[in-house]
Length: 113
Image (cartoon, rainbow, N blue to C red; front, top):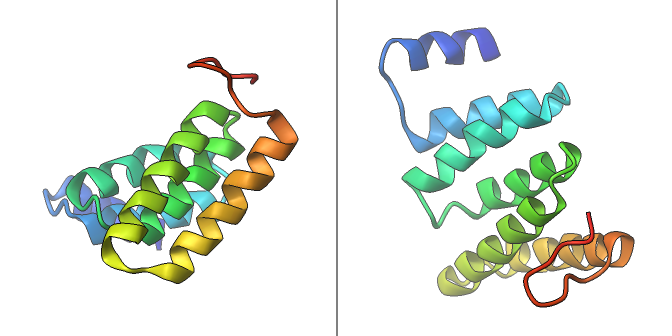
């Protein structure tokens, strides 16, 4: 699947859905940095794509980027609230609380990672 999507990207077919597919594929392979790269491009195309924000947070957390995961989920929660996506809002709120429980809540612009 990833190979086919990469071919489309190389051919210039770049959009949110393609980047989401690539991000999810790399996340499933636990290639967290590559997943995060594609998912970040996905939300750049479509900032309201709450599923992408959710996976971006997971990818960044998997890569050890705790501050980046926190930021992705916070932005995803805001996007979900703006569009009435209560399920995504609830899921990312749970992920964010778990992250803060495991890594601490940052104080005034610092991260505990």
